[in-house]
Image (cartoon, rainbow, N blue to C red; front, side):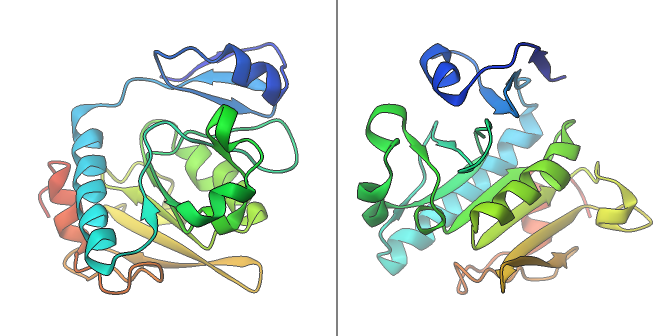
Length: 206
């Protein structure tokens, strides 16, 4: 369960307050304490982070996967702590909040953002989707390995689904992957993974 601290704060206040322990986000000025993920969730995150890191190394790309970076939309008082964030290292010199707050806000710094769905699925499918589109992040994955999201997002019957949103002409267009379908990533076109392999990392038997 997500715990919200109902006192409006600015991003600057949030960044100064944020403790080292725990995981917190800022949603429109409200501090949100994220629940400890279940093991299956972390299995999926670990599996993806490992495979993407291997692909980054294989292609000698100037990317890395940080541990606790925040993503801040330029407008409003929000900041998100993603499950997996791919950072474009060369652009960090242009990020004014990077050195002191380990925070990025420019699309050029963020080729890919991944959220693994848990009980706060509405944030992933509604709020974060809109904010990432507004930032201009080129690619956003929603990994719904437990088929928690609403039917209008993953279909009926509800099945484990990977939704890959690609920014085209300033708007996200979604392609979905299920079962033994190979996922197609614009950022990592040679990544050789099926949706089923990712789901099985989270203990889901297809």
